[in-house]
Each structure stands twice: as C-alpha cells, then as structure tokens.
Image 1 (cartoon, rainbow, N blue to C red):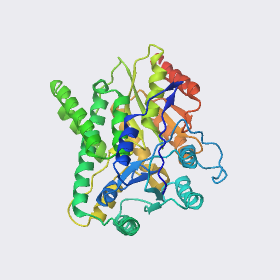
Image 2: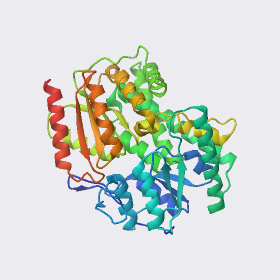
Image 3: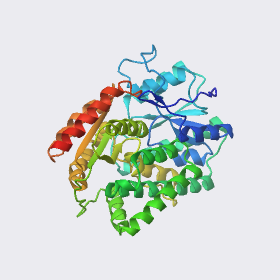
Image 4: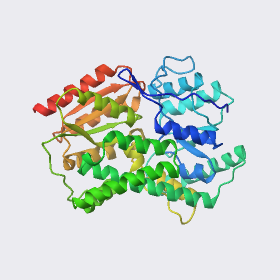
Length: 414
C-alpha cells in the first residue's frame, strides 16, 4: 500500500484546531517505521496485531473531508464509511500497511471493504468475519479459527510470525488500558468533576489510535490522580464496585443519588467520534447558564470498547482473543438489541441520569432501526430523550448545538 502523509484536523464552529495528540502519536509511529493496520471497527483484535509486531490503529472521520457521493459507493453507505473512503480517494490517510474490515458486523463497512479492494487494488485489505450472535462455545470456536486464519494471512503477507512473547506483552498493555479506563469511567459517573469529558475522550481515543506504552501512561497517570482525589472523599470502594457492575452488568443495590446542582447527561450512538461530540456539547453549554455534564458515554468507540475483558494468558491465544472480543457489548444488528435495551432499562435509573442524547449517524441503518427502540424503552424509565441526526463531518453544527441547548433548557425547567 502507498504511504500517505496528509493528516486531517478537526474543525468545529469555525475554529481550526491543531492536529491533536492522537494523530501526532500515530505519525511518530509511522516515521519510526512501524507497520500500521488501519481498523475501521472499534472491537478489533488488538493483541493479534501486536503479537505480529504490527500497530493496529482505529481510523476516524476527518471533518475537513467532504464525503459527497462517490461513484464507487452505494447510496445507502453511511457517512462514516463515505468519509473514510473520501480520505483514501484524496490521499489523506495516515501511512498504512493494511486495512482491517469486519465481516458480519455492519453491512456498510463490509461492503466498503469489498469496494475498497476493487477501487484500490494496491491496498492490502484484511477481514475478520465475526459470529452472527452470542457468546456461546460455538461462537467462540468459530471466531478462534477465524483469528487463526487471519494470523496465517498476516504472516504470509508480511513475513511476521505470531510471537508468544509479544502476545503476552500486548495482553498486559490492553489489560492495563481497560483497568484504567473502566475506573475513570466509573469515577466520572460518581463525580464527573474529577475529569472533564473532553479530556477523558481525548485520552482513550488516543490509545485506540496508537495502543502503546506512551498512550497508556497518560491514562494510568490520570487514573492514579483521580484515585487520590476519590480516596480523600472515601469513594474509591464505591467507584470500584460501580466499575465491576458496568463490566459484568450486575447492578444489584447500586444507586447514585441525584444531584440538583447540574444536569447528568448520557449519550449513546454508533460510530460517533467522542472527541468531536465533546466539542459540540461544550459549545452548546458554553453560551448559556446551564450546568450540565456528560457522565455516561455509550458510544461504540468508547463504552463498548472500554467495558470488555482482556484475553487470558493461559491456553490457546486465539481462543483467548476470541473470548475477549465477544465480551464486548453486542451489536444491535447481531441479535444484541434485546440485551442492550435491557441494559439501558436496568442501569439508567440507577445512575441518576437526567437526560439521554441519542446520536444517529447519517445513513446508518442500525442507528435508524435502534434509535426508536432506545427512545421507547428509556421513556418507560421516565428519563427524557432527544435524537440527534449527524454526519461524520458535523456539517450542520449550528443546528446540532441548538438542539442540544434546547434539550438542556427543557431538562433545566422540568
């Protein structure tokens, strides 16, 4: 695959932000000769790529690249997929040795992978086909063999064999990442003032872009600092219990008391960039007197990536990675909708959520199918919701911010 040097920046409300840390760290890795696999799906097999001495990097939409209709793409292709394709067509992707696409997870992304192979035959496209449902032994066995096949393909293409030593190192890295981010997420549910949502989003997005020791250190330092603060408030035990409950979906007697000093907001949606949404939300609340905090982030790129189990070190490494991947919260299109709706119905009332913002990616069929069901089930809990339809470029920022403002105003006066 050709190596591209262009790096996009995030433009929000007419303000051109400097290239953020996650892209800077990725560029440094490329300059150091690291072979990078661009991943278009958040639950990717991090440990497998690292065990082959390749750096997996989650790809993000670039708000400065218009994802207009492109002759190679079907009209139903979502704006996120269109944006990635447009970046490639305009030679704006960061240096990549290969791209990784999921199979049997999202029709749009699966079709994009097929079209990518046809339109850019010089690119190396990898695919992992996930089981259609569940965490059964059959599903684990199937995914285990798919991972083993992917491993053989990587070795054949790049001459990089699977290293048990690198696998152990990768498991340690991801285990520490999950531990730190799960603790921070739980801490923010109890005391969101310990860390602005913008900073939290920036840090875990940076790790997903460059899963290395440098990105991990930033998260661990943040978690350590928060732990010291919570220790003074005698909230460490409560935070750890909440983190365990979120990971295992065992909520028991957990109940966060309401706080009338600010609005506690939860957000949910598919392939939405948490950092970009954080800027939208901050712009929406900065021009008025509303005190509101995003305390719970249920985006695919964050919550469903953070709250998972790391692979075990014992036994078959491919099976261990398969079990880890299947521990992520299930996708709505893969027989996971009842489970996700049940999760929302059980947990939102326990977390003193004042309002839920449902984000829908433009032209995303799963978001379109799921959003009404989410709004309906959450309405039964008495928690108000609003639906936010947005594209990967946040092209209609004024409308989006106004809708967020209006929703918060309603919550404030109700």
